[in-house]
Length: 219
Image (cartoon, rainbow, N blue to C red; front, side, top):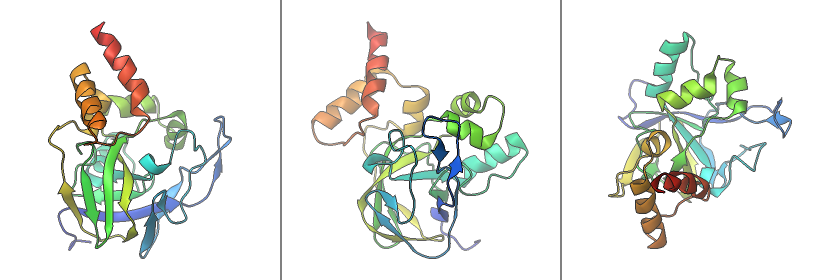
C-alpha cells in the first residue's frame, strides 16, 4: 500500500466472531479483523459489525472506532509483538491522521461519500485487557494516552482500505480527544458545555458523568 495518500484507511475491520468473556455480558465482540472490498457505513457503524456490551459500547455516538497505525507501531515496539489491524477492536486502522489528537467535533470525509465526526476518546476496559493479555494493560494504555477516536456517522456511504481521509472541518475550541482523556480541566468542560448548549457541538452522553467529576475540582 505504498501508493496510499497521506491520510488514508489502511484496513476496515468488523467482528470476526464472538468469544466467551468473563465480564457481565458473558461474551465479547472485540475480535475485529480486516475485510476486503467496499463496506456500507450506516448510522450504527459498519454493516455486519456489532457490539456485545451495548450499554458501554456502540450506539450512534460510538458507531466507528478509529486507531492510527502510528500508535499501533508504538505499541508494537513497546510490547514486542505485532499489532495487527483490528487487534484493539478498531473498525478503521488509519495512516497519516492523528486519531488521538483529533479535535472533538472534527469531521472526516472518507472516500467519496462517508462523513464521520469525532465524538469521544476510547476508554480502556477489562475486556480490552483480557483481549491483550498484557500485565497492567488498562493502566499502561491509559498512561500513554494513545487512545484513538470514537466517531458518529453524519453521512452514510461505503468505504474500504485505501480510501483517502480528508479533514473537512475542525472546530476552533482545540480540545482533542487525547487532551480530554489525559488532562481534562474545568475550563475544558465549560468550553464544551457552552458549545453544546449553543448547538455548535453535539456531545455524546457519556461526557456528562466525567464533567461532574472534573468540575468537582473547582470546589
